[in-house]
Length: 84
Image (cartoon, rainbow, N blue to C red; front, side):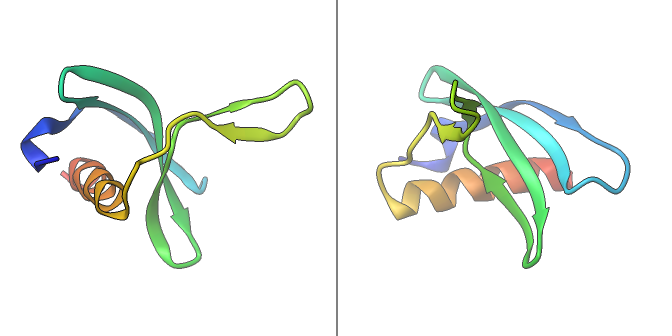
């Protein structure tokens, strides 16, 4: 999948000292996926995939990139939009 097929359709940045820095919605070849998170972790900024809270109180991912390359492309596009 080329980067041109991956576009950030919306990004909402947070101010303050929280580790959560932003939420992003991404358009992937005509489909919008909501709920990506930009997080400031111990090794710097990273992108967390969308997830939901289960009835058992645990968090479960709702989106899984099929390849390592796709995950890296998603992260690159989202982090670039966050830094703009």
